[in-house]
Length: 65
Image (cartoon, rainbow, N blue to C red):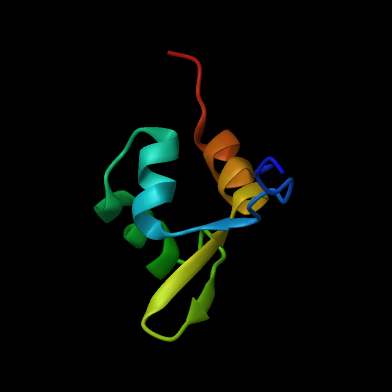
């Protein structure tokens, strides 16, 4: 019997994981959460940020330099 990893895709990430995914720090993610720019679900003492919400927020911040 071989072990197969779950085929479930994550739908949410923590603040730290969100920062790592887009290459910033947690302060920037928290700032966006508190400004209500980035939606999240409050789960106890932590936040769960939807991967699609993170992607949309990040795309909205893109600019041509």
